[in-house]
Length: 203
Ligand code: SF4
Image (tube, rainbow, N blue to C red; front, side, top):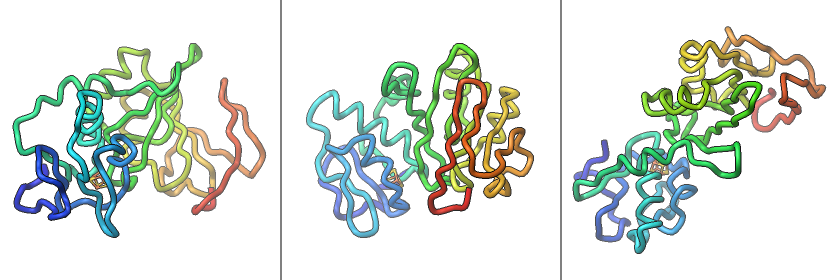
């Protein structure tokens, strides 16, 4: 939970603030770019929400923050914002929020499909998301894009009896993954095509 005593001096006055436990992952700036900005080391509130829409976005950012570094000076009901997660981006594809510190705040996604739903990388394991996924038919596959963003994938896999998919070159992050992709060729798994695209890790 964010602490007023650690509040960054760069924050503008008002309800929302960021404290010095921020790891500068950028999640808040993605969820509420009209509210959160970046210094060289942290994110901070450069403008308090000026509209109900930006208030909701700032609340989503607070919920997504992996280190609980965002706080409010006043008691703020976050339940309506929580209910918007997973947040639909386009039909069938949602962003989960509840970013994980283990993934350095990386975003994760939820894809609904009649042949079984997919989690793409992992959010924190939270009761809210578990219930939302359960209500929408569970999880069949968990695609792990690379070793850095596995977070709580093992907990979701166990809860939903889902199959984790990861490339052999990054498998050390989830050694007991159910499906290990070998080599560099495209692989079809159910309705999903896995395309080898190494970035800052080998898999
Ligand atoms: S989401 Fe949290 S940790 Fe990430 S940049 Fe914003 S305040 Fe910092």
